Length: 287
Image (tube, rainbow, N blue to C red; front, side):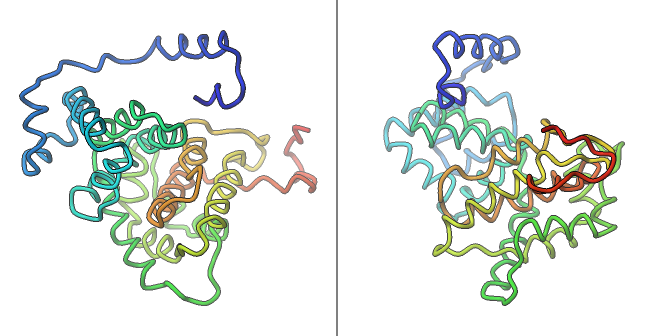
């Protein structure tokens, strides 16, 4: 879809598909009895977080979309604000943002099949990000209307200058976001991320700000003497996961804690200078 949006030729799109097809996994077995069982709310949650049920979730959401339309399915299963929807929304940010990125593509191009895949991906991921989202939303609500509102880039700078946050992730952590930043500095992260509030009256502006913030630290070098570079495995995902169009307030609140996590879990980068400024000594200007 990215290639299509960039006006790639049919041959280029096919080549991109073929390259990606080499490492795609099989969807796994399908059990109709499991799909039927998922329609019972109390049984639905027993299958969450287990990747062996991906194919079952995929068929379940395909049929839900065929019956209700993808807009109503997203409202019911992701944005309803009830326990089930909040749980699935948190799972959207698992797996280093892949489900929410997939969902963004599906919504932008209005492709029900891609949206069903995104929902199924989210369903089989863990929900540990919920430990952060709930408290961050509560803190943001308390700070709503506060004067001297900080920008996302300012909060990223504060994260970098906070010694506990900056050193929370350790090399040996199995998951540097979950076990590092969230495991060792959750209170500091919540206090920082909770300072950012979103207003329905400024969704356009704050969507642009979120995209700009991700673009600010995405090409920034993690070590002082490195050239401006791109850390694809983490920071690029932060850029991809920012909303492509103004959406619900929660879709702008949730990426910020994730951006802060991805900013901190690697050696914390120094922001690249503005395009019209000379780079610091020792940093190669790629222009």
